[in-house]
Image 1 (cartoon, rainbow, N blue to C red):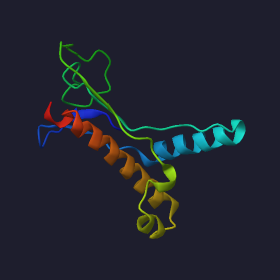
Image 2 (tube, helix red, strand yellow):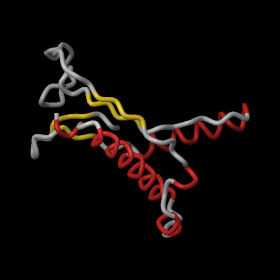
Image 3 (cartoon, rainbow, N blue to C red):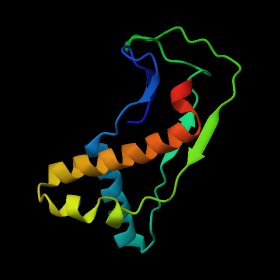
Image 4 (cartoon, helix red, strand yellow):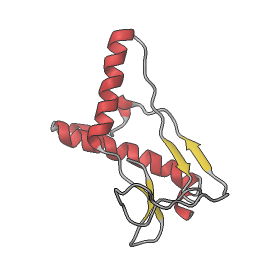
Length: 127
């Protein structure tokens, strides 16, 4: 998740949403690492505005040898505040469901929003 691609409807570069299962796997791996080593793993929302440097093709193709043109351009980088897993979701939202898949989706949306907020700060949507 998070890869930027130009929207065919808006024409703007947009961030792909994070996959709830991938986010959960990272969270689980961090919890498992802590139980083994006693050390925390730290996660930060990071946004890169690099679309003009090496834009992907307009269509999603699986073929090798896609034509890519590298350009000289400024880039943007933003790193947000550390993700606090215990307070990622509003308490009322977290209490509204016990369904683990729904909670995974809510966590992925919350992290996607943090990345989008950082992306906005560096002008990512204006590329």
